[in-house]
Length: 336
Image (cartoon, rainbow, N blue to C red; front, side, top):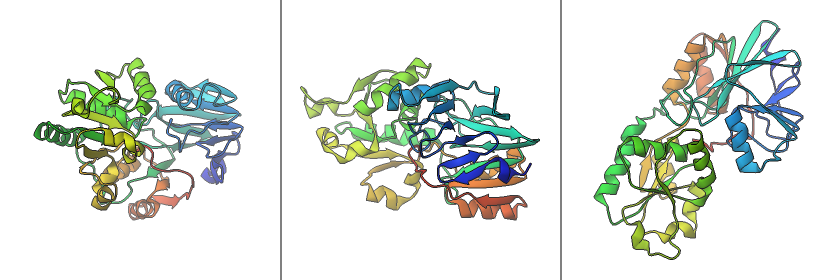
């Protein structure tokens, strides 16, 4: 079987004709396999959804219990058969519940990575290399300029600033699923034992992470109703980036604006957002991780999607690996 007959790009997403399913479709379909819970990959309205138990739970938290007509939980590493096609889910290291999806049929194995990272992260299962014939890789940070620093060093910069400016609150923008909980855990692992204040949009997901054994320490609601701004002097407050543009952020004493994202490598992006303390902490692989992962899989062909496709395709060609861009649409960088 040819790879292009096993998985085919369509307007709805990546489609498997023999299996009759889509991977991370951007429109409602009959049967969807979902890599992880970020909204650009996991949408409501599908008739049937197959994903890891944690991803299904996260989708229910975000969209309500009736987010799909029917659901099925896939255990990591278990091979299931969908209309004669073998599928299995393997850890992607992106966020809690995230998985790569291996599709096998006619002696051919294709692995769709979804979003992934190779860096250590105690808030989710570590990335697992899955040998394959064709590897479909994301390329969010698929340019050589993107080489992420150690996340513990970035956390140290945040703690140093908090110590230097004890009269100011530090507001850390972090995406609600994955990044926010990782920042909290990084702070705890660095020895920060004070309460971490969180925006209401983070409460359900953070509570779910804790229910799954991810220790985040004492979390308190970030509200100044009934209190004074001074009560948050020296505090670290975590919230979604969108909240920092509204009245909520103006409640805190002379806040230091921080943002945890791989995009903080680009100084212009930090300036555009008015970020005083950019923290280069990403839940996506950087250039070196992307190229190392391609080699590690042993794939003879690579399909590139979700980002800077051309540079990674060119790297593959120079390395003697067949490659092509998929040009899938509808995927953003919610979890960067």
